[in-house]
Image (cartoon, rainbow, N blue to C red; front, side, top):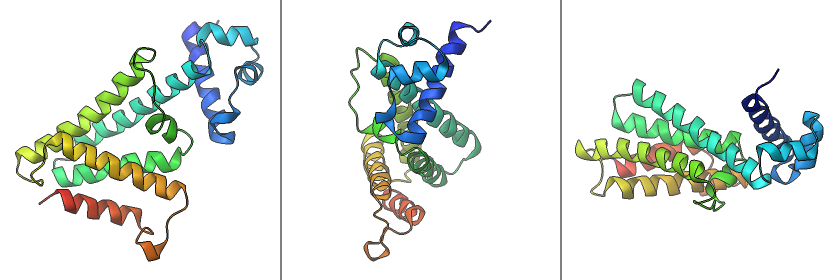
Length: 191
């Protein structure tokens, strides 16, 4: 017999596939119930509404990126290379998960309703900030606080993902080489 956690995770996984196939707007609790061979009311046992379900997916996404970044931190000693790889990780996730990225970074999630989501997002930001703080302490970065550097890098990578997602990869604008742009950005913040 399946446990409650197995069913809940399966609902998340099926919803993720629905998003990946047809976008966020395609997700409905009714269709999810049908797909899972559950009654619509059974779905509400696990998630109080669609937003609750989407918040669980967003939390999982932040945790996935966090796991990748923690692995990079274990493997890479050079601060410049580490920041480059972290930005590439954010970029790659955004490009491969174009319907998830806006849920994560464009949508405002209520902190009181979704504390786990906010905790996951903040932990991810904090880990990146710690990497930049280490580089700053080593006198490797421009004279800005680690928080300012993290905010700048986050805004840059979000913008790059947005431009790419919108199809703005024109070489005339210098946007045809996203990884090259990431290198240039890292060159701007490292001395």
